[in-house]
Amino acid sequence: MFNKWIDFSWKTDAFIDTWSFVHFSWGIILGILIVYYGKLSFWQSILLAVSLMILWEIFEIFVGVGEKWTNVLSDILVGLIGFALAYIIIQNFSFLVNKILIITVIFMLITEYLGWTRLLK
Image (cartoon, rainbow, N blue to C red; front, top):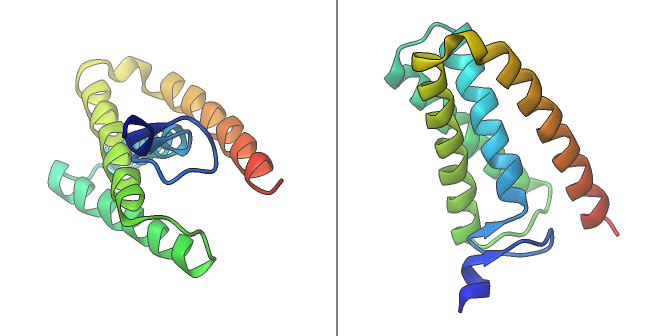
């Protein structure tokens, strides 16, 4: 049962998987770009972030990424957790925002690359 919820491999339909790191990173990136640079209100920012995350999941369906609905839901939830962390950082540690954005983008690019190279094998 535990492996249905958490499985740190690239080819899985578990609720939390290695792709969760990518979605978490994107949540942080969206949070920083939308809230810090976009200067939107909290609720406008959440609405935009959730909309973008849902659109991404719809895009994945159209390009043939077959996921269970629980994995799609977890992708969005993990992204929102990243978004919430970005919001907290912006509110309390705004002097770190640019550094965190750069580190997160680098981490996301590495994990995205690793994921796709392993998935396409």
